[in-house]
Amino acid sequence: MGPIDDERGLEQGGINSSDLYKIYAREHLDLAQQSSLGVQMHDVTISGIGMADDTALVSNNIHNLAYLLKLSLSFSDQYYGEICAEKTQLQVYWPNRAPGDLDIDFIEETNPILIDGKKIPFSTVADHVGIVRSTSGNREAILARISAHKNAVASILNTGMARGHRGNPAVGIKVHCLYGVPVLLSGIAALVLSSSDVNLIEGPYKATLSNLMRLHAKTPRAVVYFLAGSLPGVALIHLQQISLFGVIIRLPGSILHKIACNTFSTGIIPKTSWFWQIQKLCMNYALPHPLELLQSSPTKSAFKILVKKKIIDLWESTLREEAAKLPSLRFFNPLCMSIQKSHPLWTTAGSSPAKVAKATVQALMLLGRYRTESLTKHWGLNK
Image (cartoon, rainbow, N blue to C red; front, side, top):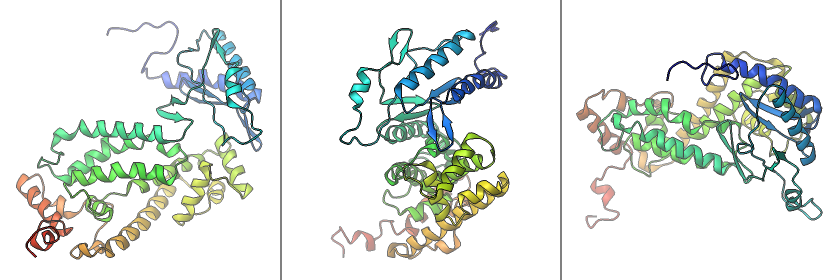
């Protein structure tokens, strides 16, 4: 491309660009916070949320939001910046409408949010820092992640991972863990997820592992995860959520740390709160109470080791109980298996296509899914 001689602005992808963005955006966010026009959360007011050059202004009052926008416009004019109307999204979140509530349609008609004389319309979907924010819930964001995951997996199937290939499934699972899983779970940990949202992610994840090992489509999840040596998709989400909370634990004095302490100190946490999910996960995995973790501030390595051990122990016992209840798995012994590494059935096959093909047949026999006469008698004439 040749040299880039920018006399004003930040070079795209430059080494110092991220640091310069922080210097520039810090004053903007401080200006928004000092206005106290945002959302009141206990004794903390949130008016602006920033990430690099992306800034979200938040308020419970649309007129206060208009004042926040005016502050941002004056700040941009001072530093020769420009806020683009075409790239600005305005989203309105509200609880279920009830008699006497302010009509959202009226607010939309009297919308005072203007940039360069252009009224910013309400948007139901907006992309912020790689996460699709939708006023209707998390489904849009999850479907976007599933689609991106499908494309990421399709781009690496030619390495021998496809069902008709003879590549070693253990290698395919490692490649998928490197290139597929981060795409699927990107930004998911920051969302308030329902059980249906988690199941929506769990399905493609389990199906991908099953296909990489060339197993039957209806293979029980206990078998899939023990043979793959992988945590379930729901456990990976929980691991990321608790790890994200670990970042908040190690930031004493920050706004997020204050909000977390205030939230857990109240005693009653609404189920729509992200911190309610953290409290529930700490109870499920026998971890210390979140407020205790916020006060003790464990180190990153100690917290990571503790969380991973608790999650692995719980899911290994859960999957072993599920496998013990299935009569079709009479040759499958999960007591000597682990979800931390791939099963020796795959690792001992090496890179030999013939041995991988044999291991695939052995896996089907191990699961009771190989088409023997005892299995085909259920739909065939030979009883």
